[in-house]
Image 1 (cartoon, rainbow, N blue to C red):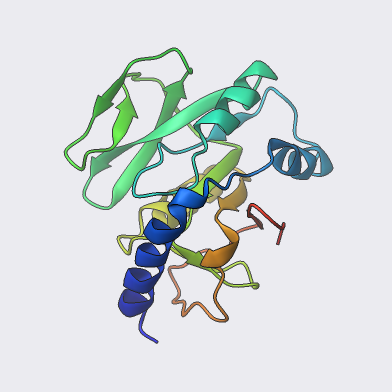
Image 2: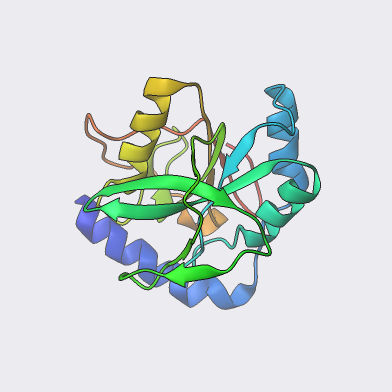
Length: 181
């Protein structure tokens, strides 16, 4: 199945199932971070949830309460985004795509990156919206330092196989409402 067809099918399914009010247990994510011996001085990169994505704002708030520094992405130019310092009390500005972004000008490189997912397979491959923003961001961060990538998804977003290409980055973990991959 082509990525574009798979993407459309999965987005439709996520929209239909969204009403089930599923969420991810913060303790599952914290356990992964503790296993990797990451500390509260680390920077967590999140995202502002849109289109029925897993809501990570509560997760980011919990990280911030534990002393982690938080960041959200800003789209800088076509197909590229950077992460900027953010706090749960900060005001956000809606970008041209309708996605809230931080006003901060303090660019940061996350040590831990929470990644939104349209679909995934058990091999930790993901499919997003198709523009490659996260793959490019992961590549950019990995050139400068190690980054722990954790995809957030609903269990029903798992498929048998995600077609990948040389630009796609496999995630370190995927956490769903039911399981950790």
